[in-house]
Length: 75
Image 1: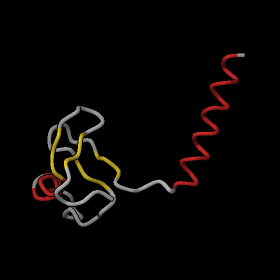
Image 2: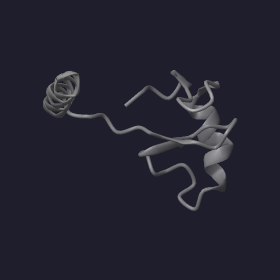
Image 3: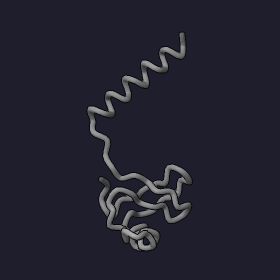
Image 4: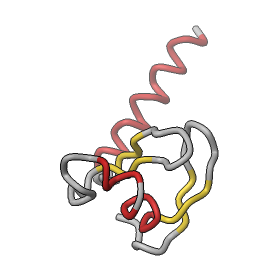
């Protein structure tokens, strides 16, 4: 999980912001009041960015499956 003062970039709109800024503004309107720790909402567009780390074994598996799928498409 990123540090509180780390800069985040919204994957939807490209807006750069600090996690603590979002928790202090946008997340305060959420019923969980920024205490969910699973999502951070972009102050610019409102996209909810997941903050859950993917386990390395799952990342490797998905990479292998993706490579296999792309090779099948080339045949």
